[in-house]
Image (cartoon, rainbow, N blue to C red; front, side):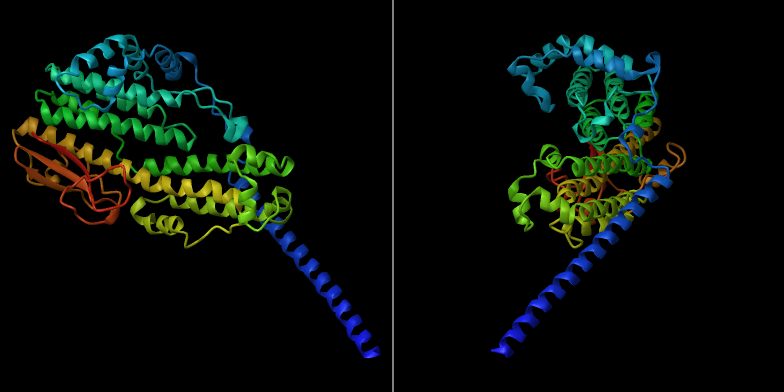
Length: 442
């Protein structure tokens, strides 16, 4: 009996010791995470990058220089068409549908004129309340696609009427409208710019495939609107520094107000159960700082990858997307924020590939306008037409160029890194066996 009592006391003592050791280990680990977290925040601060929402607000632009004020007028004047007219935004019309397109454009003549006026200004600053963080309202962004479709439709109708230079002028305005968003510090703004560019480039390809008579000067004017530099990557690097600041403010606010996590992200009790937690309070107490630290470290890697061309960072992005460097399930907010951010890289690479393909196509058209025929090689464009050839964002090598009848195809090999014969396939997908193509039929 005494022996059993001694064993019982020993077990109790062992349990106490184990609990004490566990508590000490947890305290040490928690302290270590806190130290690492503060170190990461100090590093960001000393690098001069924003860590508070108050640092995000851009410098004001004088009203007379600010295109945003004209765009807001244009947005307010948009006239919705009938159901018949509104279905025509796909830019593919039958002969019977064209009168409805013309009616829609006539209704929006004032809007189109204001868009042309706004395109003359270089600066564009929409007044946004950055102190609201991820709850910031962005009412202007929803109008950009609508206006791009109006400009694209206007360009196509003018092209049908034999007014090719006027058609290209509308495309130039559309591309300029997209560029009005390039200085925005928000990722969603740059993605909207990519979307507006795609709409205008669709019209541009159609114009050059079906029409003739474009002047060399107008072709050069549109060419100048196409951004083929790697500045796009650097723009996203700066943008993600701002996105990181928005994330920092969210983590800090969540620490003070646990209910904010559900408000900003929609996280439910089910999310916590999947992570083996009873609720948000246990998550914050046990893993809040670890989640914060995981977010900062992933954002640091994210930003560093944007510093280099996509073809150099492509494999690293794929690793992040594939989950090989999985985010711990307890890092609930990081799991909600990061995967969508990882996907932006390949989406933007597709945009860059399309823009550069159109840049080369315009250069080829200028060459033909001056010499009567397309060249045998893209190298013939340098230096007479353009200063240098843009590289394929997916490989860092030259684009593929093929003569096709009276026209040509110029294309990127896209994410599978192989020549699929200039087959566009389904461009809404971001993986698969297809190329990213600009094709002029004449």
